[in-house]
Length: 125
Image (cartoon, rainbow, N blue to C red; front, side):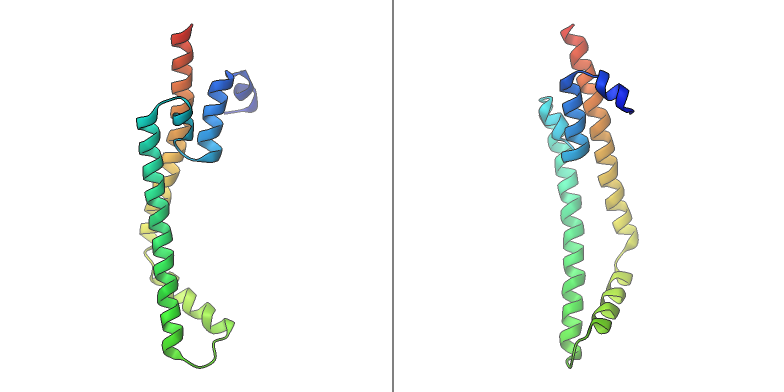
């Protein structure tokens, strides 16, 4: 969507699209009072973020345990090596799926906010 199209839209549609694009998926739907759609988009995105955070924390804890088991002096080279090994063991396919789901929700949220806002404006005319 180019800037001319964005400027030509009604302020309510512009706000909804910008909320969905810049704040969080589903924010524009909440602004347009489409609470069910907004809640679903928000829930999917939050679950995906928590999945990523949990995976990163699990990897970090594993790396810390490995450092403790090795004992001795811990330098940056050892930490880097352990972190690289831990991240290589992580499921790259899982991360790709989760990031793809977040991206799909975000894009859907933007398009849906635009279409819902446009449809609501047509009903008011």
